[in-house]
Image (cartoon, rainbow, N blue to C red):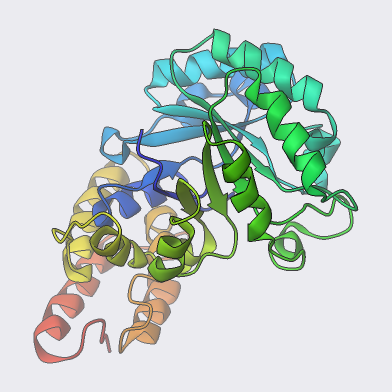
Length: 330
């Protein structure tokens, strides 16, 4: 599994439509689902929760939970659905997640986490990985982080994604937890120095291919979240600069391919806005990007969006591709 660059799991963002869209741009990055709670998989509509398009692969399933039994069951089901990796979320700091005893609050319970990971690995041949933070509340010393990773390593887990911020449990909103706690990349670099046999992937505050390349001199991989969601075509630069792949579609070609996908999905009952909401940032940084965002917001990101308007925007994109700078839509 190539984890050199991955797109972070993001709630309400990295659903199957977003992943399909991102895969049109990048052949090589590893994609992750939103966090799916093991209890939901046990009791809910598994097809709705877990189905995905094979074109998205490689794609990892991220699970949330603290029951070894339910997590192991969800892991087995995830493998049956065709995922390439199972990841355990130990980083989400939201109050709702804490109330249900999963996410970042589990950093306080390394032995329970170890039990979960052991049970998960016993039910699958897929790699089981961990996404966590450097600490929580007032606990952010390197010794604690080292001991936590060492405990989990003993279960056989070999890949760790480390968000280089601590989680402030119950004190900050999830959004604040993504910005206020300071980034401490050096702690993640030190983990790699001390655990040379582990795959250490760094996450948090990475906004450009240049930053990603710098981190890759010190760790095994980088995970990027919000920057990709708000400017998805950054993946084209990542393909070129990190994977040495020049065979990347233009923005217009991405739109054309996505429209074909959208029309097929609409036939299955998917709403236009469920797909097109993910493309607001496609022309980020280009002349006319505001026109693109406004047109989508007014016509395609509303619940009753008419699929016929997709053809209209395609005509605009094609016309302006010839006569105006990329992305100019008016």
